[in-house]
Image (cartoon, rainbow, N blue to C red; front, side, top):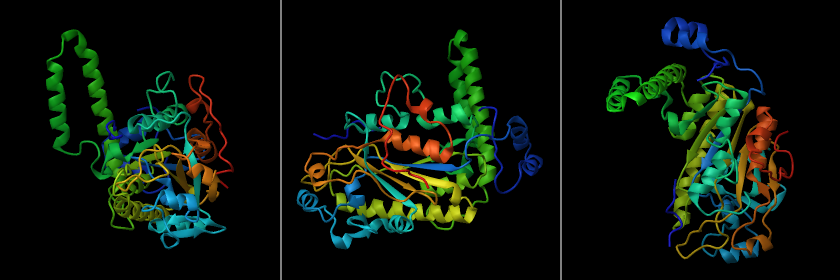
Length: 401
C-alpha cells in the first residue's frame, strides 16, 4: 500500500540597505511614497538574512552524505549505495563522502562554509508527509495540543521580534517578484469576483467580511507594488529562474527581510531513485550555486546563511523498485561564510544502519533555535517552547563561528 496518500501589515518596514532610496521612490511612485510614510525602520537583531530551503518529500540523507565505506550500508543498498567513484570524500573524514552531483556543496564544505547536521528529526516519528511537514512548519511536536501554532514558527518569529510586512517572504506565495500582486487587470477581475460573492452574503455578515477583504486587497496591492518596484532591475548571474532565483531577487530588494522561505519538491523516491536523483540533485546544486553568486554580486553573501531541511529521512534498506520508503532521522545542511563547517550530530554507525530507519540524535528545533539565536540574534524560547513542550537543545557543536 502506498505511504503517500496524505500530501500536503504592521507598523515597521523598509530597512534600506542597497539601491534606490525610499525618498526617491516616493517621488517616482505616490503609492510607494505612502508606504514610506507609513512604516518605520527595522530595529533589533543582527540584521542577517536566513534562507530556509525545504526539500519536500523526504530527502534521502544517505544519498547526499554517504558512509560509503561501511559494509552494512553497502549490503542494505545493493543498487543504491554510493561507491567511491560517486562521492567527494570529506577532508579529514574519508569514511564519509558527499555525492558528486552536489559538487558545489562539496566545494563549500572544503572551504569551511558548509555543515551537515546528521540524524535530525523529532520524538515519536510520523511517516505522514502532511503531518511531518506541519511539525517542521509550526515548530512543535504536539500539533493538537500546542497553543499559538496558527502561524508557522517563522511567522511567529516575525510577529514577536520584527513585526514588519516584508520581514518574512515566501517564494511559493509571491512567485515571480516582478509580477507579484495585481500589476494589471488581474486585480480588477479578482476584486470583481470577490465583491460579487459578497453581494450574496447575509446583510448581518456583510460589513465585517467586506472590510476584511478590502484590507486584504489593499495590503497585497501596497506590498506588491513595493516588491515589484524593488526587484524590477534585478539581474541574475545565471540563467536558472527557479526558487533560488526568486529568493535572490527578493534579497536584492532591500526591504528589511530577515527570512526568505523557498522549497523544492520531488524527493519522495519510492521507485527509480537513482533516476529521480540524477534530475533533482544537479538542479538543487546548480540553482543554489547561482544564488550564492547572486548574493556575492549583491554584496550580501557575508550576512546570509542558508538552511536546507526535509520532513524525514528514508529507510536504510532499499525496496524492490529500487527506491527507499519513508524513514525517520535525516540530515540538515547549513551553508554560509559564517558557518562553522564540518559534520555535526551523530554519524550513522553500523548499529544505526542495521535498524529499519536511522534514529535521530538531534531535535530539529535545536537547529532552528541555533540559527535564530546565533544568526538572527533573537531568543528562540518563545517560538518553540509552547504548551509546555521541551526538547533537547544539543546540536553537538556550534553552528556558527
